[in-house]
Image (cartoon, rainbow, N blue to C red):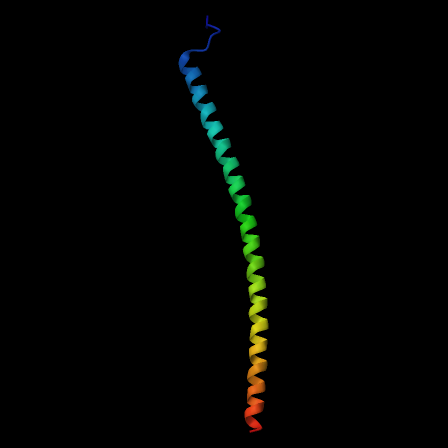
Length: 77
């Protein structure tokens, strides 16, 4: 008849498996947090890019207006 006590090899295997599962859970939690931070950073960078593009467009419009005025002044002289 089999003994009710599990042998030490089975216990060691279960403890190793428990440690591996715990390490996997820790890794998943770390990756979730890193992913959250990266998504937030990506969103901020996209917003910053949009703002810079808008500023670039405004500056280009002002430069074009200045060039037009200079050409107009040059034509009148």
